[in-house]
Image (cartoon, rainbow, N blue to C red; front, side, top):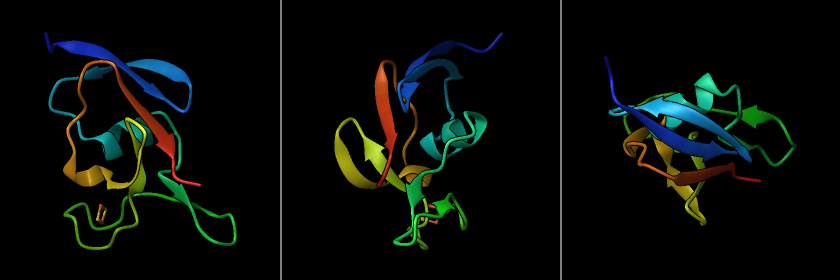
Length: 81
Ligand code: FES
């Protein structure tokens, strides 16, 4: 059985499996990584650190590329607005 730990995504705490990227955790939580300038929800596109579509606020730091970050215990993630 995979180890899981709590991660808070836009205020809701979910159990996330070790080895999961933040981008995938946000997808599982059905939350956008960021909002475009016109307010449209955006999420991971390339999945390899090139497109910057997956930017979100991770532990209070905005514009982190979530496809390049593994979830950690008690991490807080918010949609980049
Ligand atoms: S999905 Fe393209 S940089 Fe993260």
